[in-house]
Image (cartoon, rainbow, N blue to C red; front, top):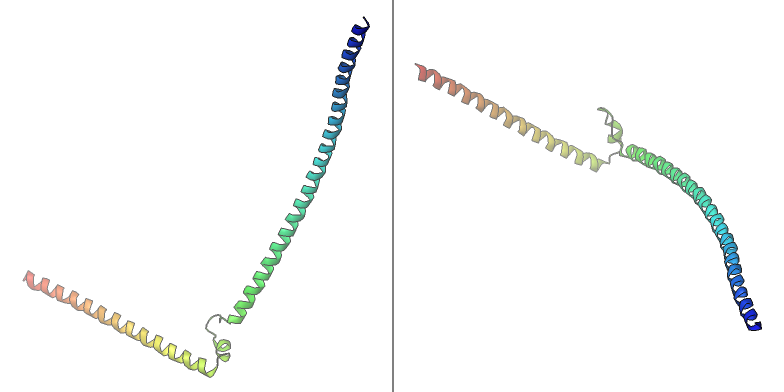
Length: 144
């Protein structure tokens, strides 16, 4: 019986060790899960804060870029000195004599092209009118 008692005690000890291991494992896993949840919550909060900071930085940067782009566009418009209306005096005052001469040549060429186009258009209109008149005369002759 003493062997049975030792064997029973051994089985009992193994069983209790298993139950103890499960209990310790459950406690450790609960502690580990609690720690992981806590770290996860902290990370999510930090992520939210970083996300808000990033959005703020993007908005600020976008506003700065828009402001600089508008200032650059205004400066380019001013530098180009595009005249408003028919007042070209400010632009002409900035031209060198060589640029002024080149401008005169380009204006003369444009005027010649415009005059040529007008003459061609007038000639074409006269020819169309002449053709129409000749057609009407031919119709009149054919009726008689």
